[in-house]
Image (cartoon, rainbow, N blue to C red; front, side, top):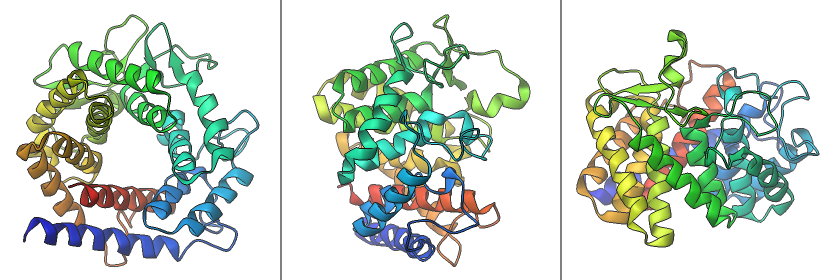
Length: 331
């Protein structure tokens, strides 16, 4: 198949997922009783806006604003629960960042500004990066790689270039401070300024990527590449491009274990952004290979991860569709 044919296939797969998701959106913007949790909703408006369905996006944002937005700009399933997804709940800035970005893309400033104003409190000036929890949280401050990359992109969308560039530099420190850069990538920097290498064994999947092991949360090292490539395009500063290429070098070491796995989806997007910025053929090939495997793994109804709970099925189907469309849209 030619590149054009692959892009047509990627768009087609994404739109099959969109049709399935769209069919579940009710007149009030909700997904019904089976999807009352915030985790069902936070990516879907972005996807609807991306596919030229602004009415659906606005309807869902109306529901999100009425159902989940709190007066301080926080988004929560209930006053006591961020989300019932126990892993996702550990990344509150990641969830809310999607709504800040989508709101700004579609002109819903009644959401983007209050949400972003709170997300700015995740910036820790002493650690010089976005932390896993808001500064008002009593937990120890920890700069976390996915939160840093995602809120860096939100800052770029909201026009807060100083924080976006700060996030890019923080991602550079992650790269520079790895104790075993050929084999392992640690995902958190503690208050000491060193990467966290000490954590419970059962939590390893949220703390490091091992290049030679399958089943890793590859998205942690995919998102930084996308942000850094976009920062390079925004500023022309080669510092950010060099950092992106450093991340990609580690990704290439992971490739034998990663290419056929679902959670490589953000790596496909990040590599596509790098290829677009630099015309790097290796990045282009890796992105295309992951995208082909994602399309091959799609269920006949258009979804991914159909064996998982409904909120995971919705969340991951929306996400893969987003990245396939973003990849296909890049030159």
